Image 1 (cartoon, helix red, strand yellow):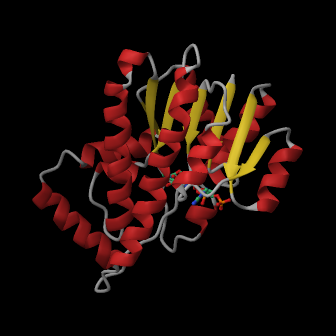
Image 2: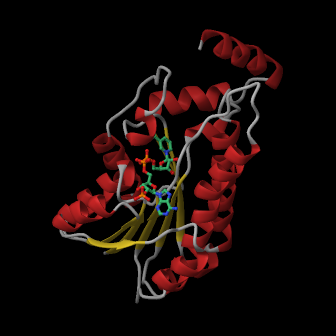
Length: 240
Ligand SMILES: NC(=O)c1ccc[n+]([C@@H]2O[C@H](COP(=O)([O-])OP(=O)(O)OC[C@H]3O[C@@H](n4cnc5c(N)ncnc54)[C@H](OP(=O)(O)O)[C@@H]3O)[C@@H](O)[C@H]2O)c1
């Protein structure tokens, strides 16, 4: 397969690039960190530095591909809002990095996906979007937007036989979560995350979520009446 992975210079995207490369696929890994791109190249991965916030640069990069069988959009970031300081610049930054880069990537890669015989578009969202989590006002909102975007594309791209999957991880040990100052229940390794994602991609699952024990708890909690969840959420703030 010809595989394109954004966010390939770190964490989940990097592990996926290395694992797919080791399986003999032709992998293009995208990011901006030059040292990390060089490390990927040493694994036989084609690399390019692209700032996905730059629409023109991203579209020009996408134009170079003849056909892409699998595109995995993993670029993203996470920042938390600490009340009483509601920081709208933080909100805008997180929305741009998680949503706008995904929009640019999709626009750039759709022509090459359309030229593949069995194309598959995969967007990395988050289980944080399942329910309102304290401090995740910005991150959760961005991932809720990603979920809506990807899940709607699953419908609108189906007449063109383009499969679309949404990935909703729980906590995965990466530089993104290494910054967190709170307990991360059931955090798994990038190797485990890569395995779960590749398994889900093989089965072309609509939603790939893991670790299951954690994501099913969040899915169940999301069914609670919002008044009850508010009281639990307030206890989470006091406990942090
Ligand atoms: N780790 C978790 O527990 C977890 C849980 C749920 C969801 N997720 C999601 O999974 C995805 C990957 O997370 P991760 O933990 O692997 O994060 P990470 O280790 O921080 O990696 C983030 C990647 O995004 C790239 N990136 C950010 N801004 C970019 C830009 N403007 N242009 C190009 N590339 C850009 C970074 O590349 P450069 O630094 O080279 O620019 C890096 O490769 C994210 O969407 C995250 O929200 C993660």
